[in-house]
Image (cartoon, rainbow, N blue to C red; front, side):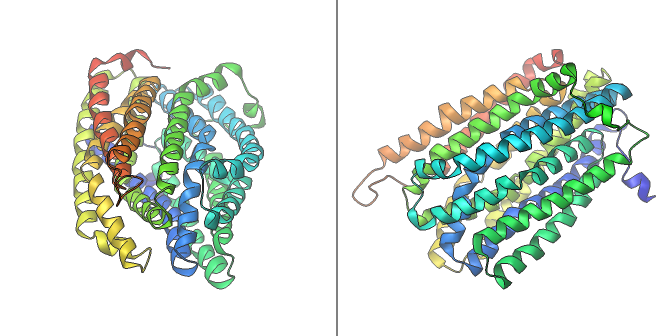
Length: 456
């Protein structure tokens, strides 16, 4: 019974919405665990070190995301190719793809480890990071970049497992590493007084453990694909296909991270209190976004397997059902966050002004989470079919031409004697605007149906 529970899911048969929900639930729980990585980091430093340390962890986030885009690209490309070959029952091509993914991940980890470590401090200075937190930001980033291989291999190998329809194993390993991360956070920070560096070290160790567990699981899936040294040799056709499909998603993440860095510069201008509030909001935001990201990933696997089997009517049926369920779940979760907002914010800090500021800013974003359910679900369908370029262009438009101009525009228009840098709300109004526009544009391009022509 247990073996069946962890077995890969064939999403080309059975009720579409049941398959999607069954596949999504473990990922949703997994995303909760993933979010706990960052949340526990923030709670521990906020309560044991102080609000400035909390601001330091948050200010490092956009730079961290920007310099890890290589892994995002490989992970998305791997998941798409793996799901389509699995749906088409192409064992040899599936084996070569998985081997090439492992090699590409190792090479990308080495590049990030070297380059990111060199540019972290200059980027922090470029963003006018306050002197009071810049050293903490740098030490946090350096430890995470030096130990990035664990995070890289977990995210990419768990993406492969999900492409094969196995979301349960990825969940189990993530839960193990999350518990380990919590224990190590408390040990390094609360007991050994290692501060922000202790939080980063705990994350690196926990992610390395989860990566090793994923390798172990893949080595035992001999009934689906073959794993041997010769499959690790890069083959141009398969490596290029992975990169071609993953590159647009990597670029999307890079553009999103660059926009966050640009907006972070505006955020920094409002002072340490607002920076800390922004960190708290983004941690709660991570939980609010979980259903959207989970359904988006599930739709990618669902579409990939069914496109591989050439079952396009089934893809569209599942897309409709999955999107409606995602919207409903997102609406319920967002309502709960708004109702219990102050209690949630109070977990991170005991400063009343910071709690109130965080709750007020969170209220601005509320409607946007339902809009993001549409964007993530339908973008997931297009990516699963092999069309990763359209979601990329949509992200570019909503991020560069909507979010950044709206943020700086509102800041400029609301300048006054009381608010010399403009109203702080500009940060979150701009984010809400980009989310709503993104949902409308994504729905339009999904209905056009060009994604049906992009199968591997």
